[in-house]
Image (cartoon, rainbow, N blue to C red; front, side):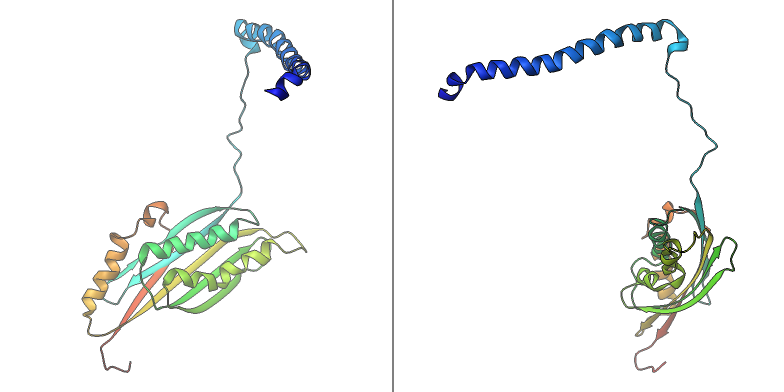
Length: 226
C-alpha cells in the first residue's frame, strides 16, 4: 500500500497513456468497419468471395505392395496401393510406415522372421533401380523394413545436392517365412496366421488393397535338424 500511495501519480499517468493507445485505434477501426459492414450487407457485390481451384492437387508417389501369406495348403494373396505425398523430407518416412502397416495387417505379433523383399524404384527419365534383400529379424516382421534398400535409397535420392530427382513409383514384393519349433500341428499354424490378419489387426481398414506379400511357415518338430 505504501508503494501505491507514493506512486499514485505515475500509475494514473501510465493508465491514461495505455487507455489512449488502445481506445483510439479501436474507435477508428469501428468508424471504418461499421459503414463497410453495412455497405457489404446492403449490396451483394460487396460481400466477400472465396475462390478455390478444385483442379489443384498435391504431387504424390504411388507405392504398390504385394503380399502372399500362408503355406502350400492355405495361400492367400493381397495387394495394397497407397499414394504418398511427394516431399523430400516426408516421403521416405511415409513409405516405410505404409509398408510396415501392410505387414502388420497380415502378421502383427510374430517374431523370428526371414524375409525376401524385392523392391523397384522408378525414376523419371532414368532406368529403374532394383534391389533384392534377404533379411532376418528376431523381433517381428515389421522390423525388416528398416533394412529394405528400396526404402533406404529414397533418402539419398531425394536429398542429393547434384540434381533434382522425381520418383514416379515404388513397388515392393515381400515374402515372409517363419520357423516354428516343436510339435505344433501345421493346421494350427495356418489358422494362427489367418487369425492374425482376419481378427487381430485393424491396420487393414486404413489401407487400400493393392501389394504382393507372401508368408511361409516351416514347422520343425522337436529333435528335427531341418
